[in-house]
Each structure stands twice: as C-alpha cells, then as structure tokens.
Image (cartoon, rainbow, N blue to C red; front, side, top):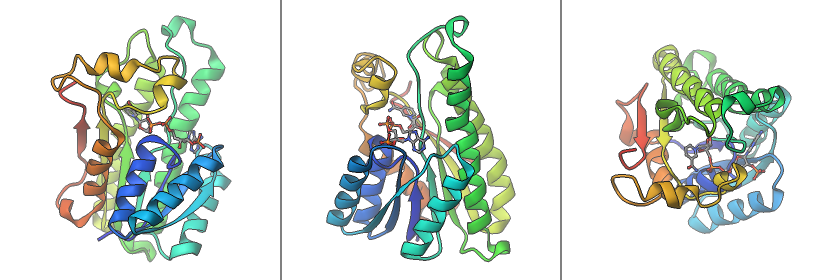
Length: 248
Ligand code: NAP
C-alpha cells in the first residue's frame, strides 16, 4: 500500500485528479506545481476534502535543486516516500518540425525528459530498499504520442514521451530488485488545459470524437490507472506501458 507520494504537476489536470483520488484512499500527497500557487492550493484542499493529507511544493522539474527540495519537502511533511507520479509535462503550439525553433526544442526536452529523469533518479535514490528506502512504485506519465509521432503538431513532444517509455522499461529492470515497480500510463485525448497551451483548446473534444469510444477522456479516468499502478493491486506489474487512450 502506497501512503506517501509526490506528484509532479499536480496543480491542474491529470496530476490534480490523481492527487484527489490518492486523497480518497487516505494517502499523503506532495502537490508539486511550478507557477500556479492558487491552483495548487485548490488541489491541496480537494485532497483534504477527499480524506487525505497534502502539501503544496513549488519547483521546476527541470532544475535539479528544485527537484531535490520538492522530495525533501514531501518527506519533511509526511515521512519517507512510497511513490512518485512523474506527471509534469508541456507542449508548445502545433508546428511542423521545420518551423520549430531551438529554444522551444530545448524547453520541451528540458521539462519532459531531463525533468522526468531527474525526478525518477531522485525517487530511485529514496525508494530503493538497498539505499534504506521502503520500496514502492513510480508511475511515469507518457503519452499515446510516443506511438503516433504527432506529425505536423509536435514531433518534439512525441519524441520526449518516447524517452519516457524507454526510461520506464530500463528503470523497471534496475529497480525491481530494489522493491520498486516502475510503469507508465500513455493517455490519449484527455480534457485538460494542456491543449489550450498548444493553441488548440478544443483538440481533445474534436479528435476524441474519432476514437473507438467516440469522446475525449477525463483526467479522472487517467488517474484511476495511475493510482492502480501505485497501489498493491498491481503488485506483479512492472515495466508496463498502459494505454489509456480509447483505442487511439
Ligand atoms: P496541464 O493540465 O497542462 O497541467 C500541467 C501541470 O504541469 C500543471 O500542474 C503545471 O503546473 C505543471 N508543470 C508544467 N511545467 C512544469 C515544470 N517545469 N515543473 C513542474 N511542474 C510543471 O497538463 P495535463 O494534460 O494534466 O498533462 C499532465 C501529463 O499528462 C503531461 O505529462 C502530459 O504530457 C501528459 N498527457 C496529457 C494528455 C492530455 O490529453 N491532456 C495526453 C497524453 C499525455 P502550473 O499549474 O504551476 O503551471
């Protein structure tokens, strides 16, 4: 049973829904955000209302000192960590690769790959039984984009999620003997703010209509898969890439 978890990017969207569901199980949650303190405070209230405990922890996942500090703050609030949801991620406006500038490329990979690797490394250090940890679980939030490639939209983002799939496969093998399971969820078209940040606020609704289930998904539907992978109910699952994408 996972009790103390850190969720990166938990102020909104999938991270917030996951925090809420963890709260309903009575878990204690470090609610990471980067800029939106008000939204993070709302997540904390929602976790508490659901029956859990929570603390908001500011930090940019692409800055090593911030990552170490957010793990420390969660441990200081609730004790040794049992799990990480490596969820923070960004897209940028839809463009073919030929039109994408170097600064944007660097930022996408800094947050989505370097940031996720830093957080996973920190979790590996703290959860591994051979290093004095409790064991536990890491859930990486990838994307169906890693399979689809996202042509003419954001091949940079899609490639960053390919790295997350590969991280999941390798780290599951590294950490299995340490009592730590590592899995990924690959959401499809989920109704959150991320599509507006890519310049297409109605993207999930429009493209979701073309999936096998004929609609966009909700953050709560992804959270169910994440919390299952964190929990002992998935005790024989590691190295899995779980599509939550309505057949897309
Ligand atoms: P969202 O609604 O845009 O929320 C993004 C979250 O990430 C916010 O809490 C934001 O914090 C945080 N964040 C952004 N940059 C950060 C940084 N540098 N350091 C720390 N936190 C940062 O996104 P979402 O749709 O829930 O997406 C969550 C994850 O699911 C992402 O990895 C995304 O790639 C993946 N995903 C989403 C979909 C989808 O359709 N929505 C599909 C596939 C995969 P602030 O509130 O402080 O800005």
